Length: 543
Image 1 (cartoon, one colour):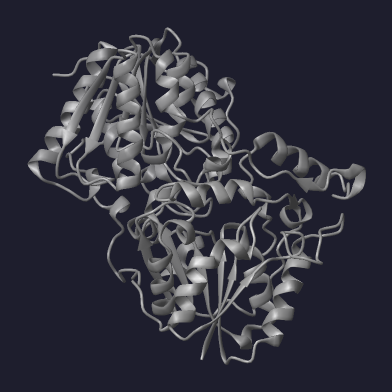
Image 2: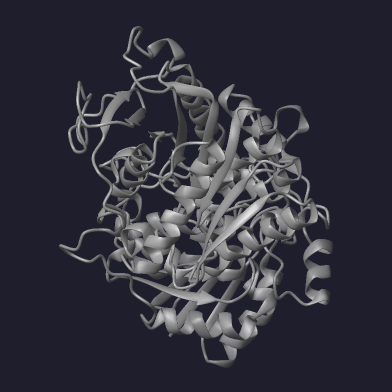
């Protein structure tokens, strides 16, 4: 017989699984909803020393007591941390691990990254770095979120009002040590079967997983292994409250090894490395640190690097305005410039890096062919927590470009793609006079509900209120992932309310990253339209 051990997320206990547990028991399964130490269990209050290790030990005691041969460990949100810790120490007892709208933490990761309150997160992180114990000074309990704050932990989509009331009323303080103590894994459970249950209303989907695997990011390579399966639920972050019947059914199917399997296409070129939709002629290209300049004019003179020359021997270094060589020829120009900002997160070891992807090279060459400098940048958005650093990289690259004598410093456009769209917020909120246009293609324009740690700074849907009459050129694809399309519609609604100058270029049959996967006439026209609109706002030759 299969036994399900259900582990709740932060601030909650076993009660949150009541409806799911009832459905599973009706099917004949044994069910153990867990209330971890300090999370409301009678006789097991939290103390200053309660931490992640305490919660792992809670699960180990339970697993050791369960007689069933097949034990399925289910972790929701924070609950996946103690689940993985316990599985690592009892791999022989675990038949499957289920990540219920939960991440994939690894050895050394801390659940602190889940905490949406940036101030509290930084304070606890600083205490940990300084070696101050969570019990020192009485600051060892994190209060539960207020009713208004709960949604920062994830989407409420689908939760009936009575269950939402219980979520807010029965929540308890979370021991700080459970979030600050790193997860320690030996790899003993790395080969266990696992299932991801993705809640589309909270911003995750099978399509998103398939996209990450196709990118070749080594962090997601294992997701294409046959032992891994996936399910989707069209609901928010708390499916046990919004659709208990469906959750129970999926858990039974997962235990039986069912579910969608992601495959990595062997020998097929990933979409982002396929040819650009336009036949853009090669132009002079110069490489300075993380920045490449594609220059107008005929191909001649010194070219620093070539399209494939630095893919494995990276020559990145910190950027400084003074890195622009003195005395560079400016026989034509100065020209306006378009800075292209890629999405992510992109693993730092992924090769080629984004500035060498055919799509961005194609855009930059096309811009150069139309009389402007095309600029590609390898910014350091390696994780969602890197958005501030990536924003600094873009600002530094812009300064470098504007200082180049061949660039007209008063005529610059920024063009954002995919998750890079979040980085447009700073520029929309307070556009400088020299910024003549912002463009965005299939962008993410507000953080997903599950990205609570991103904060309010990187929210273009709010920042557009400060854009004034700054021209915005937005390419919208009709076959976009639902969770991304929702952020675009939020942005457009906000732009309409403040009368922002937004031009929308629609590609009804287009998909995310269409420029290298769709060579249809409609795709060509959409790219050409966007290019000419941006160049028109810059006053560059576009005919």
